[in-house]
Image (cartoon, rainbow, N blue to C red; front, side, top):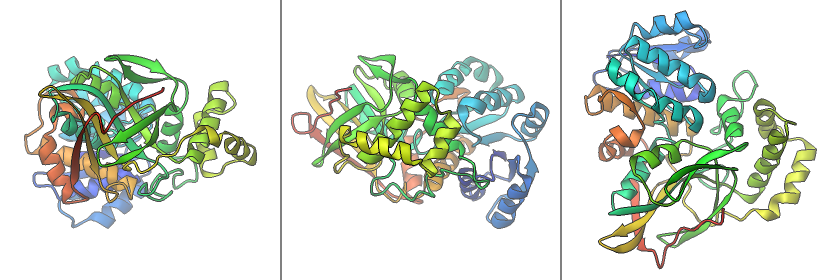
Length: 400
C-alpha cells in the first residue's frame, strides 16, 4: 500500500511516518509538506526503517498539487491543522480521488461536517477515519471500552492533561512551531476555549460556553475538578454510544492555567485577541493578562488526583448503577507528538490489514477494533486500566 503523509514533516506527522514505515503491507510513504526541506530531513532520518520513503512538496491550499498527490496513493494520513481551516478540503479531495483517509482532527465543527460526507465516501468506496490521535482517538476508544461494561450508558466524560503531573513538557504541547509562530495545535486550543462548544445534555447535542467546571469522583479513590473544552468526542460518542445523559471533553488542568485560559477566552470573545494572538500569549504571557489570571485563579478548583488521561462512563449493568473508568498511564502522554502520531499509525494498520475498511466517514470507535488497538498501543506505550465502582461510592456530577 502506498501512503501519503500530509504534514509529514511536523512533529506528529513524522511520528506517524516512523511508526507506519514499520507496518507490514505499507510499501511506500510519501512525506508531503509545504516545507520540502523539512520533509527531506524526515526521509533522511527514517530511511531504512521499513517502507520506501520519499519527500515531495504539497501545500493543501494548492488544489492541483493536492489532488495530484492524492491520485498517486492508496491512503492519506492528514496531520495538517488546524482542521477547522483545512480538514474538509483534504477529506473532500480524498473522496474525489478515491483515496482512503485518516486524520487527527481535534475540532468539533469540521468533525460534524465531515460526518455529513459519509454518503459521498460510501459511494466512492472510500474509508475515512476522522480523529484518530490521542484526544480524540485514544479517548474515544477508552470511552467505548468503558461503556462496553454497561447495559445502559448515562454519562460519558473524556479527559486529557495540560499542566498537571504526567502532562508532558511544554515542548510536548507544541506551543510554537519551528518558525517561532504559534503552532496549529495552540491556535486550535484557542478556538476551542472560546465562543461556544458542543456538548451533550439529556442525550441531545447542545452548545454552551467552554471552561465549565465538572467535579468528578472516580473509582479507585480519585477525585478532582476538570474543565470543559471544545473537542469532537461529544459529537461522535453521542452518535455511536447514544448516552442518555451528559457527554463532554475535559481538560485536567491546574487552577492557574485554567484562570489564564479564562482570561484569553474573555479577550477572544470580546474581539481583543484573535486565535493567533491568543496562542502567542500562551508561550509569552503579557504582564497584564498574567495579573488578571492571578486575580481569577481562586474561582477554579484543583484537579486533585484525577488520572491525567481517562474516560469515565456511568450507567447500569444488570440493573446495578455503576461507574467505569478506563485510563492509561503517563507514558502515553509524556510526549504529545508520540501520543498523537502513534495512534494515527495504529489506525492505519487496521486499514492495511483489512480490519477497518468499510466505506464511509467514521469516528474511531465506530470502525476500529478497540481490543486490538490497545494491544498494539501497549507495545509502544502502556496498558489500559479498567476500574469500576457502584455509583454510591464513585459518582460523576457537573455543576456546569
